[in-house]
Image 1 (cartoon, rainbow, N blue to C red):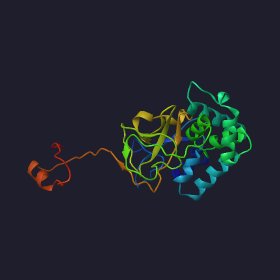
Image 2: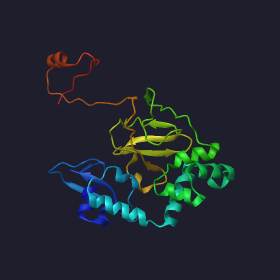
Image 3: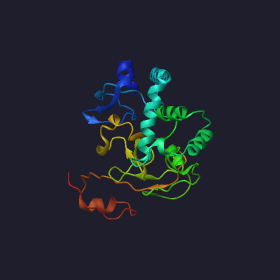
Image 4: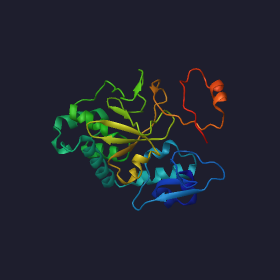
Length: 254
């Protein structure tokens, strides 16, 4: 993102992806000297508030904050409504939520009107799935949900997702430290993907189905992932050099 804004502010604002050395590349990942960078833009794209979590240059941070600040309220309310309706699911819309449930959520977030709440969602200051869960239950959920793809106890691995079911995608198996994006699945909570996962390519074109998330730095859960080993060694040397804690692996030929 810093590179995109260094080229031109309009390119940074319209950025929806990147390729580095002709390969898809996460927007949040730093570049190395000598790499060839291609910035992918789309008409109507706009900065995401989550970009402020990883951009470094003062120019990029200032331009992102300036545009978000100038974002028309009507646009943020409209986007927030779409995000919230999607999070509520196809069978139930915001108009069907009891007024007393809406009022409880407004009081919890210290907001005056429903439009204020929708604007907070549209600007990325509130998670649509969390708000949807609270609206459907009529009260905030104090108990954190358990992930179906991790084990252990303590803090939830995703910041701000208390009370929401979290599933880690088996197609890419993200682990703490990886750049991630969440697919909002009505009735299933958040499905966490690696930002470069091939199954969510083009997610920027469907903002109501995806949301930016980040890891909680205090998580102590264990995760299942996959490793790829490329070896030029002989079978005998592989057996002697393999750590005892790793079960036998097939011999790879390069």
